[in-house]
Amino acid sequence: MTTNNSYANLIDLFQEFREFLKPKLVEGVPDYTPSFMEEKHRELKKYQECLASIDPSGWPVSQQVDYHVVRAEMNGVDFDHRVLRPWARDPGFYNIIDGIYPRLIVHYTRMLSDWPLTVPKFPLKNSEIPKFKMKLQAIPKLFAQAKENLSEASGELATIAIRVKEKEIDFLKRIISGLTQYHPHLVQIAQQALEAVKDFRNWLQVNKSKMNAPAGIGKDNYNWWLRNVQLIPYTWDECLAIIQSEYNRALAFLKLEEHKNRKLPPFKITSSEEENLMRQKEAAEDLFRFLREEEVISIPSFLKPLPAQYYPRVWGVSAYLNPNEYDFFEQCCDREPMTQIAHTFFGHYYTKGRTIWYQDGDTRPIRGVIRLFDIHEARSEALSFAVEEMLMQLGWLDSHPRAREITYIWMIFRAARAIVDLKMHSHDYSMQEGIKKIVEMLPYPWAKEDSDSVWWDVEETLRAPGHVTFYVIGKNMIWQLIKDRALQLKDKFSLRQFMDEFMRGGIIPISLTRWEMTGLEDEIKKLW
Image (cartoon, rainbow, N blue to C red; front, side, top):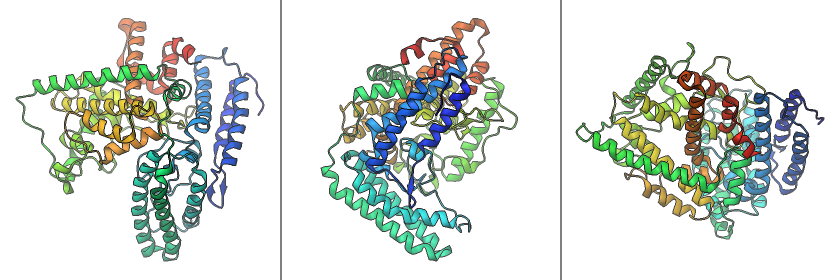
């Protein structure tokens, strides 16, 4: 690692750093042993020293922004080793299947590895069989290592892991069924993997009472995470004040909206999955029409609503669910899918961390890759949440006035879980108290304490501090940015121009987007 003050050297350092993060595999098993992770942490310091030796102050703002993106990721790795330590604290870190339950903390050794099993499509191609076999064979070894590594485990995180292991067991059973039909020579290996998952689940159940470490990280650590990794210029206390105000406003506005709509017909629950998917499809098509006609954002001609198979089937599968048994997501989206369509097709319409509102995507070497440590989610979820209310205020929901009620209910839900996130990490709430509080803060009994929607958020926020908080805080940072640009441009302000510039900034912290768009340095000075 050689350093000088050139931007090209920053790119080289970033690429070396990302390569350094890839986990070491021993017989197909990622090495998370204490000695290896300590060695990794020591090596990280060399990269941080090289970065610190670079002085970007004379660079253009856009290049300085990239410097701080790299700095934030290196800080995230440092925080992972000093505080989060999921390989030692979190039994759920040792997940074996990718994509069957909520995202975990985007830990670098996971993000840069193809270790977890992906959902297989049977029959497997001949070229896929060796790697799939190797991953199955590695599972018993992974859990043997986990039992040795989990020296600081949290009982609350173990409770979450046990719930997840039940899903892994069911999933492996389905894999075995597929292998029995198409690849019988792999069945014994898969069965051994299944038994290893069961054994680890049982081990957690027996030892959970001895796992006394807290799941929350405490206020001081939370503040360091906000400032140095997420580059958010607020403290824990400031976040709580902002989010409590958002919760109060959303609930009050819901009641005003319900009063205004009191003479309208009740919501119509969809009667089948096909009807639900059709309503989503119609909403997505109408969204793209609205964005074009109202000049909200520039939409390339190639960009179309995705086919129906991409719509979220988990929300509103009415064909086999009784409305009285719906979870929160079904309750909202089966009444009116427009808010969720706005969230998904405007806020999240990008791939591999690169927005595809522009045809070529983002090919910049630092910005054009997905961010680690929830940095990407802090920006993308904030945007997705913001556009829900933005489109409502612009009039998209005017033809479906009761959809405004659903938008406010989503706002209430997101504010409630963010308050719980903060208070679980400050140790004001236990995990069970947090679960209970989310349910109590909702205006209607649309979520139960044992429901996936509630557990999904509690699991994610205990593993990725601030994940649900970033929705609300990031949305407010976007409002601040609109205000800043409006005051700068006066009557020349254009919403479409603003949104185009915002999207071109890439998946980076909103504080850096603000610096780049406005030239205002107050936040970056506070953060560095």
